[in-house]
Length: 141
Length: 99
Image 1 (tube, one colour):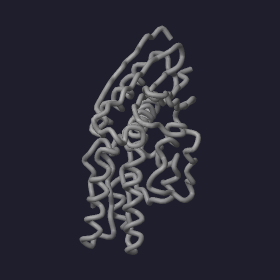
Image 2 (tube, chains in turn purple, cyan):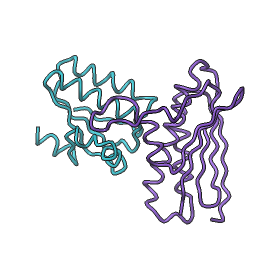
Image 3 (cartoon, chains in turn orange, cyan):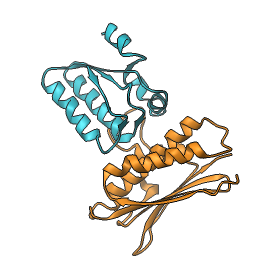
Image 4 (cartoon, helix red, strand yellow):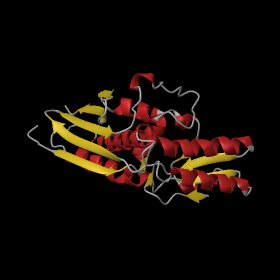
């Protein structure tokens, strides 16, 4: 794609930074040169995936450390947008997160569903004694 | 009628939004129109707050109607099938004239 964009951000483990992180993802999505799909939809969806991923890190992965930080790395690699969200908590089992029953909506449980809906590859890796990472990839062509 | 002035309805402000709906219902406002015309972004917790309000008014035999959804927000309602749960009008005027 000829675009070498990499952004690394570290913010406190607090919801007031959701808007900042989601907004950065949205702006980067709008800057991708050769994306031929619906750019506004891509920007919204990247904002949403980042917002949900960071909230997940705040709520589940860093729950016992309000002074901890969340690190986000956004990188355009070849024809993919790669987003990694790092947390310092005990982690969670991504495969155990149930698919929501959309015919019987409940107030929670849509965050990972949105990430899986809008990103092409989603994986979570627990790293012993270090930063766990939620990796999300979106094909751009 | 509740006009949401925020551009983002996310986990940072959805708790306060949910409480605001609850207070309105407790004050006897069980037929609510919530205008989302200014909301360009909503996440799972924002949708959850609206669903909580919907269930709350239903338990009081009331109604919760939404108006003026921006296109990306509307798409999220369709993805989650919540557009089948809520009555949604394209504009506040249409919502008010139909209630």
